Amino acid sequence: MSAGPWGEQQDVWTILDLAPTDDRSAIRRAYAKKLRAIDADHDAAAFMALREARDGALALADDAEALEGADTLVAERDPGLLDESDPAPESAPPPFDLAALQRLHAMLFDPAEAHTGPEAIAAQLEMVLGDPYMANLDHAVAMEATIAEWIAQGSPRSDPMLDPAIGYFRWDRFDELDRPPVVDWILRRREDRLFELGLPVRSAGYTRLLERLRGDPPKRWRALTAWYLGPRMEYLLGYLQTYHPTSFDSLNDGAVRWWMHRIEAQQSWRFPLGSIYERRRRVAWARGIDEFPAGNEFALYWAILVVPQVFVWFLLRRRHTQTERIVGFVYLAVVTGAFFLTNAPASRSQPGRAGNDQTTIAAEPPYFQSVNADLDRILASATEGTVNVAALKARNPAMYHLLHEEWKAARQQQTSSDDFRSAAHRGIFATLRSARKTGDPKIVRDYAKWYESQLRWALRADPRQCVDFIKGRARVELPPSFASYLDRLVGRALLDGAMPYPTQKDGRKTFRIAPALYDDARARSGLDEKRFSRALLSEKGTPADICVADIALIDAGVADTGTNGTKLLRDMF
Image (cartoon, rainbow, N blue to C red):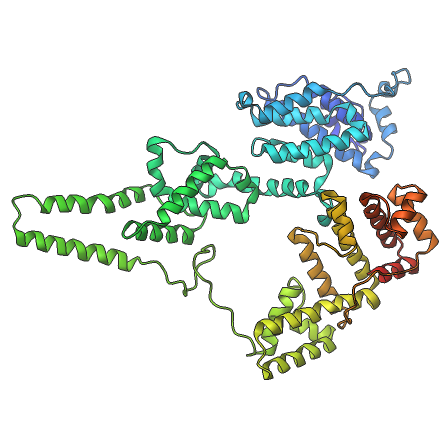
């Protein structure tokens, strides 16, 4: 018997107790049915096998080629599986399993469920997602929003839900500019969780500090360790906030406040304790996350504090003469002074190592020394590093000549470097306007997608904000990815040969819409003819209607790759 497209995955269907099928809902129902019979806490192996079988079956269902001839293969394996006498599936799904959802909520947020293991949380989510009622589109949309909020609010206890939820709702397949903010946070959390899982291997010491930050604030004797752990804790908090923000968000607020208060207090200490803290702080920032000092350093710094006091006590004993005491105190002063002078804080004018945000990095080379060096820096910042002087000379010599002449004029007139950079940036960004009007049609389409993504982002926040943005009355607060995307578009415009386009006066733009595009846009909006016409042509109606109508028109223009679509987008932008 030929293995066929299902041959290598025969165990998948055996584990699910299901005939090979391309029906994703049937696969999830079979998975949910088998999942209810498994105790994930006590039989993790069975849970993982069932989950892998579910994933394998869904992957096969997505493979159109593997599904060809599936009915024939099923008949070859077991003709009884295609018995026409088998009862047909019910037309209506069973009632929504509210108890499973409530149980998942309790696992995440009920303190009494704190003992629940990650496997049980993942299994409970799989049970919720495997509910046949998820076939109802409205219910699935509501559940997607609910689960996303729970993952964000329940971190880090919700970490076991990350992979199943991302895989089920396919959040990682969203366009980068079209993701809801909570989905952006969840995808970032998945990356930060990998950092946390690998931290014990990199640094057991910082792993313990992270556990402390997720627990209650130190009390009694544990609070005494704040002096020793303060510099490392300060570095860890700064590192998490900069590179792993979702890990920082999951910390205990009370513990973070307690440590920040102690760190600020230690930073304000005067000589000699303040100098000791500053030295240890510089060492921690220089070593980075991968280097945590050995435990004997704790004894060393306690010795630095205790030994001088013992030495003074020894000198003040009666059997020592006045001369011996003077010599001893002078020796102690010399040793202490040498220690602090050789370990004085680094000057702020010195370049610091990567990761040390308390020292100043070497100053940027001055402008007006080399035209190509200056233009390389400006192009790198304006185009996200996609264009350099060599590429500009080869692909757009006229623009290079223009920037070169502006550089010479600025040097002769002794223009400040800031003013020159600003003028050069304005000229470079003006090339995108030119490319939208006369350049590669793909550039204007990609710009339209970028603009439409801003509208969608604003619409999610507040439809009124979206309307204000359309009318030019407000700006939208956007994630950094939007700016990076626009910079890359500017780079494409430069390499396409575009020159700066004259700045237009603000005002309402008028343009003609081809009938076919108008009809397509109305269909995409989901509005009736009257509401769509009022929203698009007169900007009347609810803010949501106005915003949706504009988004639908841009969508229609992008979808039409012919002359009408390109002309519409050029007129709009």
